[in-house]
Image (cartoon, rainbow, N blue to C red; front, side):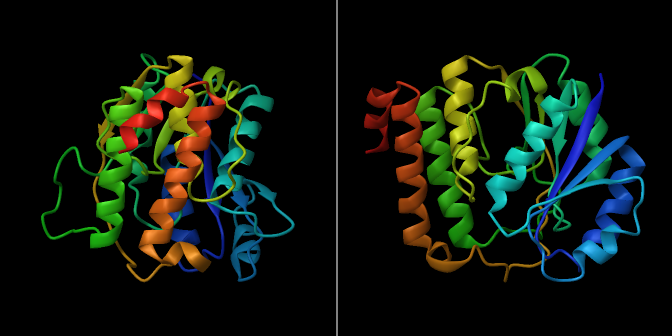
Length: 239
């Protein structure tokens, strides 16, 4: 299977070099989507001549970076796409395992809550609370069987990516993916990945830093996605 591995980045000078070096140990074709970084990220990327880079002229959002990666995989004729974050919270050594699981499904999604790898690692309380609530929406409204709504470590078949219509460019973008995957009848599988938090101080930015606002925003994006997919009645499970 011909795969592209993509890393969305924004101001990742702290982690870029070690993460990218490790990813290159386990992946062939690697793409970095630089979402308008203003730090040394572009300079550091120049030190990896084998890595393809797409740079957004301005910061557009996490979802925008992933959407660009989706388009690159489809337009490049790849069979599938691996996405991995650049904050040091994912293990590149698991890339081959995610890739292997694509033989039997459309989306392989990492889950930090399927298995405990290190009991000393705990997510920030409010992030875990929101993840649990959103995961409940996905399971009860869409009939999915997930344990982690927001893990960015995933593998996708390009045939699935070509059918997605992504319009949310921010952190709520995965909700559109899950709704459309359910509406399209895609086969989804989770794989256990370690829970790693290196920097709990990272912010979402603006109003999204307020947990109540963030959850309300996710709820609106989810409801809008249900409406667009013709699954409006499923929204009754939101309570």
